[in-house]
Image (cartoon, rainbow, N blue to C red; front, side, top):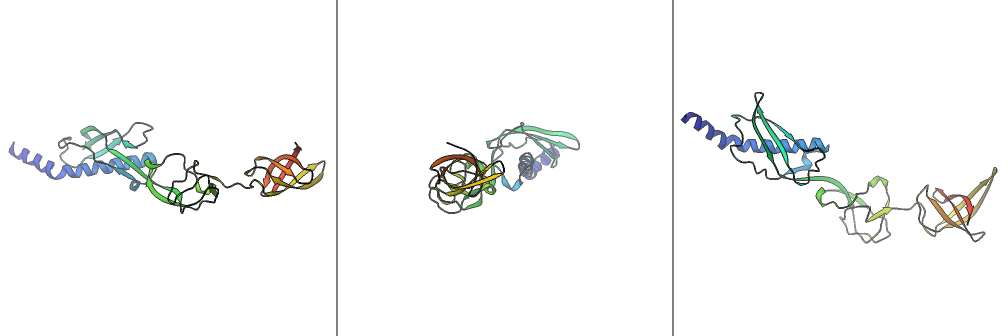
Length: 224
């Protein structure tokens, strides 16, 4: 009895801290697998794991599970199972605080409303993100408000830079029965390629509707 007690004390004194570290690492790996991200971007807070919670007499295999669709933000309930030699030696739930990190687009420098935004990537806690982040490759982008350096780039703060801007001169092209007619025009609003636009025909002082086909080129189909 004394020998078993001493073995138990040795386990509690030396192996259980290792078990807690191993459980924390298993939780981190589980979340990284579910979220398809690097384990280095998963931070696991204190487990609140009591001593003597398992009957394992050596470091066991550790299995972690979570509910489907779990966002892993803040306090997160997880189920842990410990097995040794094919037999369960511990089953319990933990609710550690989880923080995920990722590279997100931020303003590289301060910028005024209406100006193009220089973007860089920065590693931040994803819990700090509010709103939908832009995809930098969809740019360039212009600010919709004054932006400070380091500000997260969301669709609320920036918009795609127009392919044609209000007041910009464009060429209007109309094709009628094999005949191509061109005229000088002026954009009446910002637009992206493929947008239906209204353009002032400078020759006739009328408003033409058409499609912004290319930068500086509108294919028209009617007059208003």
